[in-house]
Length: 414
Image (cartoon, rainbow, N blue to C red):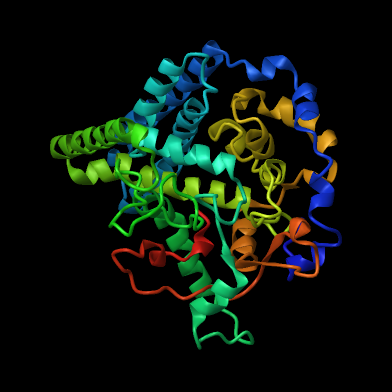
């Protein structure tokens, strides 16, 4: 499936045609009942496997790499460790994600305890993230209510350039790479701190202009209902405990060792979270919707399954390989997702999307080919969809205290 120059060319019929016939009850009936029943034994096996793998990488690397004979070999070995451990960290984060959906076990208390421990260790505020992630699932691809992955509309895209836009001049590959790296390594922490890339009506409460009101660390912010205050505070305590623990470890073993063992895989974790979520929800063949045309079925099927081989299946627990079924039925455990995908795929027909393109090539093409969305205004309002369009990358604007979205424009799609 190749990125095309103009996604509008793909819109040969109203967007509702492919999704109007989707019957969620029939889809649910097509999936075997056992797929909806998490197995604690299986889930604990994957948790134990990942923890053992992470510990083994730490022990082997900290023991063997320092005695390698040359600096070059040590640099290569530590870099390889960081990449591999980053994959394991991401797998553990995905298991925390499973807990947030109630797909780890049938016990909510156990799910929350394990999810809180995993995500706090990986500097993710578990209960705060779980709340906003739930809203993302409720309003996926809604241009106003989805709280992440929301691209610029055409008018906002053009406005972001001011008088600078020259459509006859393309961004240089080096500049595209620089902006892509900013997205990949800064997108996740900026989303947690400032809620970048959310829709205008994507918060639980109406924003009032306060600093950090879209922060996942602000229990009184617009992202959360008053009833969630204590849960967000607990998330903050978990993050504070993890940070203090890391400082203590740094003072004990040295901060350079801490960076090698934890810091660089943590950076890879940030990259993977952004890459996965960006590619799951950004593709020229999937639309976004305004309020008049959005439905849950349209939003849930506006996702893409991407086959990235053993990395996706072994390390990342099918989180990118089986994302369509995850948005339709998020309580299905990841180890049953391939079977559920197999049975719903023929039922969905043309509403099912997948892309088997190389991950790095797909990331590059998507970043260049999906800069904003535009619609065909000749269609009835309830049939219109907004399709991704290629273009130059919007310029970075100065950071303002109350306009953190400016740090990275919405093309980050975190």
